[in-house]
Length: 209
Image (cartoon, rainbow, N blue to C red; front, side):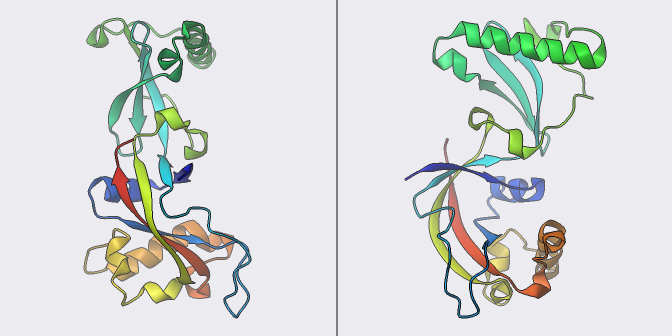
């Protein structure tokens, strides 16, 4: 079992948290030969733990508790312990706080002030920029998944298999919703739905971090 990152869109995150999504498809790169012979192993194997990366931003921090207030792509806010606190390394925590304070000073022209709502904590204004999922560190992730099955197939095989619902699309227009969502992410990469690319199919269950 290995721990690996995986990126999901906001829509997929919501579906996972609501228990509607238990499967994801990812384009195989490079694509297999016409015979279907694989040239590369899957990125994730059965039993792997996947820590989810998503759009996020820092909303504040508590100096005394060594905790950060993070906001996630669906609007949820959570306090997360900064890793330096677990390692009893206050120097690393202090360096991080100074770095964030300097960043806000350069952008806003003033340092953040403690917010009475959080006691000694600092809360950043609502215009603080969102961060790309690529830059989410493992300690900031709020969702962990365990891979339960892996297979590969042509993308269009999803239709009529019942997998559209496992992908999180449960409305009467679920098939159309899946195709649209897939194209939004992959068509510009030349892997649109109608090109019928080979894909990895990963089934998973949500577990506690």
